[in-house]
Length: 462
Image 1 (cartoon, rainbow, N blue to C red):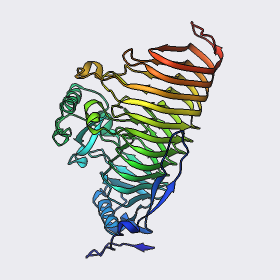
Image 2: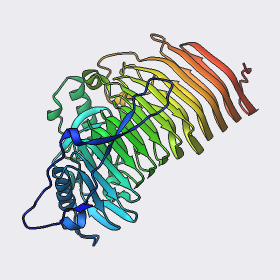
Image 3: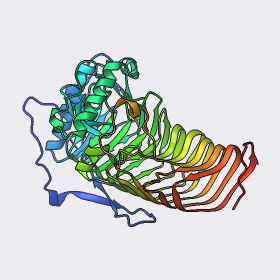
């Protein structure tokens, strides 16, 4: 194994030509055509951050040392940037091609919570709208063959970010300004949001327009905003992660306008939705015209969260071909399977499959809601109406200990939900009602059962 060490005059190995790069393929079964996923085989070269001046004293910032290790790894043609055991204080980590950030067991990358450390602003997004904001704590833009692996941990300091969880007037004004810019085609470079008291918190991991992504084996403890955000990425595997983040907007993993991904054998413990499929917001997504598609989630456990699988509400570019199976939320989630949109989104949701799943307690086992606007309902006006097309949704082989309701479908009269199959669902106790359906066509229910009913309107079984 070749090691690059710190010397006065850097000597880099020649980068591998593209033709010499090696990939493994992962074949994934799904009820739709799923291309084999390419996983880059990293060259067997290690670049320990200690060789580039990193200091494990809890006080020294290692941002420059880590950046130097990444630079050397990239110029050498790729390999592993190794974080040894210990706690390493750092600011943002920015990826380059062919870099595997490897966190050895016992290693903790501890990210500062000083906003000035995350400047200059970089191209990112906020809830489906592109902008320039504080750098995500781990960031990649237009990179290929990148990975985070190992049994170590990513752990941000949270004291400052927690003070930004609220929504004071200056923050709301910033959101209105960004919404207006995105809705009127202001160039993204002019949407500078890391200013004043806008307080748009950064993502923990944000990979933007990247190819061949691997996230494998590490732990996450807390996040300023969305925890893992894969934005307009192609080809990737996310597996064996242990993710816990219970702050505001702490989704577990958001796949947005991305395609050809496998998420497997992960544990999520979240303060918001666990696994989320998104596709941009309104006019920004119509401009990008990039669906989120061909994604399989399997063998994952959600210890806590608002949803096991959430689709939307940012889904204006369209969502299709999503398959979740053999997952469980053994404790409690607000909604087990939730598709959400509103009259501003447009786009489509089609060919979504969930099967062989298990839940503890939940408000709704399955819900479609076409009028979800949260704080945006009164914050900003509707500048353009586009109704979302929702069709070909399947839920089968579900067990749930307790639910307020088994399913509720609230479609839009202007474009009703179509072709929904709910089959072999068993709930122990139903607390409020069995099912409600409005503005939906061809909803097929088969073997939807329950042991105990506590509600007021007992609808008969099919």
